[in-house]
Length: 469
Ligand SMILES: *Cc1c(COP(=O)(O)O)cnc(C)c1O
Image 1 (cartoon, rainbow, N blue to C red):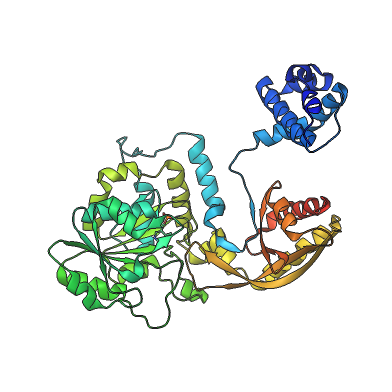
Image 2: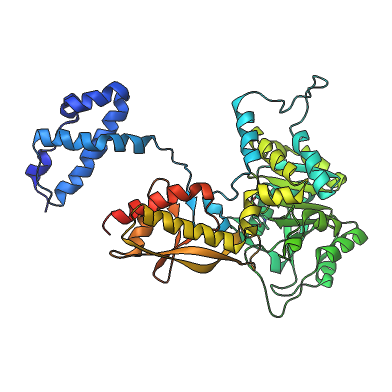
C-alpha cells in the first residue's frame, strides 16, 4: 500500500514548529523536547500513511501534531523506572522490585537522601567511623550473632564469604543444593568467581553426613548449606540438617556456612507457616555464619546480611571485595529502619508490607475485591464482567516454595474483545497494572494491591475497558 506521494506529503519539522498552537507549546517546553516529540508523532503517522490513511493538508497536519503533542511530551518525561500496581498475588516479586518498604524506611531513605549524614562519622568523638555501625547492633540483637556485615545483596554476601573463607581451597556442597535462583544466581558460578573449588557431595535427592565426612580433605575450607528456595524435593530424599553439619564442622574444625536465602527475622511458625526458621534459630542450630537477603522475607531494601561468629565475620569486613560490594547510605537507612521494626514482632507484622500482605485475612482481601468491583461499576466500567474468585497467593522470591496463601481475585472478562488485549492495555497504562490471565479471565489478586491503590486500579480498569478490543 505504500504511495510515494503520501510519504512525500509529510510536513517538515520546521513548518510545524511555526504553527501557532505549537509555538505556544514552545513557550513552556524546551525546544529539543518539542522537536523530538514532533518527530515521533510524524514518524508514527508515516506508519499510518503506509497503512493507507488519507493524506492530510498542512493545516490538518499542524492540528494533528498539536493534538498529540502534550501526551507525547508527557510520555517522554515519564521515568523508565516507575510505580506499578502488583495484582499478581506474588508478594515478593523480583521483577516488580521485591519488597515495598515500610513507611518508616521510606522516611529514613528520604531524610538520608536529602542532606548530609553521619554515615561514617562518629558524632561523639568527631572521628571517622564505619557505615556498618548503623545496622550491626540491630542485626546482633535480632539474631543473637556475635558479628554482622552488610553488602549489596545476598549473592554478594555469598561471594564475599566464599572468597574470604575459601579462596584457593575447597567448599563442600550437597548435590541437592546446587541451585539456581532468579535466573542468574547459581552456586557453582558464584563459587567459581570466588576462587574457591566446589566439591559436590551426595546425590540430588539424598545426601548423608558420611558423604561430607568422606569428602573432607586437608584442603577443605568450608561446609556450605544452601536453602533450596524456589523448589522442593519430595519422595525418596534425605538431607543433612544444618545442626548436624554444624556439629561435624565443630568436630573437624571446619567452618560451616548456611545461605538462608530469604531467611526470616519473624517467627513464621508462630503465625501458622512452619518450615522457615528465623535467622536466630538458624544460627543457634550450628553454622558459624549465615547469609540472608534484605528484600525477601525481611521486607527491606536490597541487601545481603552476613551474621555469625566474630572470628569468621570480622575479617570479611576488611576483605577488598567488601569495598566493591558495599551498601550505600540509602540502603543502610532503609535497612536500619526496617530492622528496628522487628524489635516488636507484632509491630513488624503490621508495619512491614511483606508481612502485612502475607498475614492479611482472606476475608479482608475479599472485601477489597468487592470494593474494587463497586468502584469500577460506579465509574462506568460497563464493558467488563467482574466477580470475586478464590485463588492462592504466594510469598514469592523463592522464599517458601510450598506455601500458598488463600486469597481473593477480581476475575474480569470483556463483553467484547479479548482478555489478552485488556491485560496488555492495563500493563501499558498509567500506572501500569500487572495481572495474570487464567482460564480465559484476567485475574487481579487483591492481596498485593493496597487500599491506597484502589482508586488508580479502578480508573485503570475503566479506561482499559473503554478502548475497543
Ligand atoms: C535469593 C537467594 C539468593 C540471592 O539473593 P539476592 O539478595 O537476590 O542476591 C541467594 N541464595 C538463596 C538461597 C536465595 O534464595
